[in-house]
Length: 287
Image (cartoon, rainbow, N blue to C red):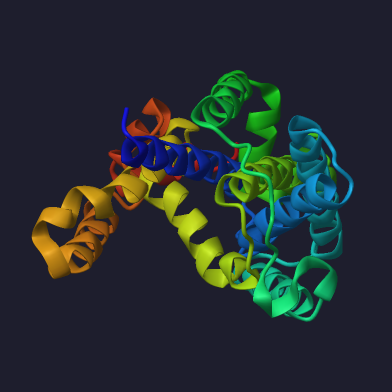
């Protein structure tokens, strides 16, 4: 493969990792706009470990994911009472505060950026992580833990009545997803070789959210498909010249109109969506 194809595939792989990280949070009903910042925590942490302390690449990647997971657990614990748009605003505030902190921290380069990061990420590194995460998420998709996530998202009161610890489940989901996103950020840092605070603002978080929204929010293959499509689409539409981003936007709008739950759905969710309104209401009403 030529260098262009390799770079494109690496970007697709990193996007898949980030999309899977957001998937666990949204599966438990937590609308986070902080995943771009959590990606930045993983990226900067691993870069600091390799540049300033000469850590091995894989150890720095795992440590970066661990620090991002700790930050995610803290965010989740502090925002347990928040839901929906209020949680989104709180996590957005955290992300923007982190960007301001990095801009004014000369230890990591400040506004000039963090240079000199070893370029150690290769194609097989990225897809080794993707395969491992794919296997973990495949096992997770049929686990009781996933059912607990869905129960908390659908109705917290009913979930608590069934014996599920709602707060612990929320913190677990956010921490798990933060670790995955942190690992994605660490791999990204050693692929790009330079980090700037603006790379991890709210636009990055919105992009990560779109991977899952377009691909599907109820099945782990959704973020994989969404991340692949949204990363490849701008390149595939280059033939349209300057109009490619207009076409890209039109495609996104069409997907959200005709597939509001994403391109992929679980069989049970699809059958429920096609029921008549009264049947659907009867299906979800607790007995």
